[in-house]
Length: 140
Image 1 (tube, rainbow, N blue to C red):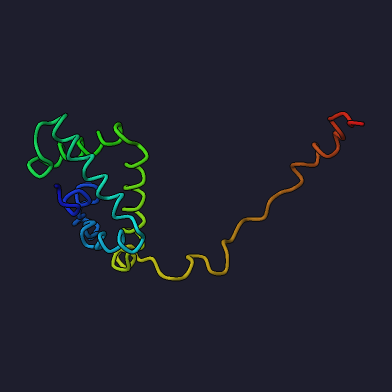
Image 2: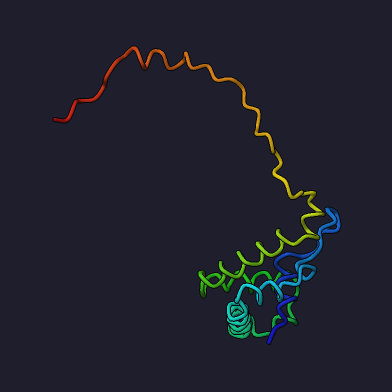
């Protein structure tokens, strides 16, 4: 059975230019256990192993990065629901991890705590529509 960390590191690899950690950094196993999603991950791993065996003829571990991404994307064709659920939870776990939030400089407060400034609108542009009057029939 393929190791979950090798799968999630393929989906979210480390980015040295941005200083972002790989998905293995977030301890995705703990996230899955806390949210009762271990069955989803096991089902996804089994599906990926089956896809690798049937379509590529090699185990996931023995593939290069491009082949690994092709194998993962092939899972989308097998079961889009399971694929989407796995990727959605991986992204939620990654972008809520404290270490990742620090790296992307996201604080615990909203970015616009006092609201966003919007320019004043020019409501006079609607005056011609108002002056035209009613353009529909009354229903009795």
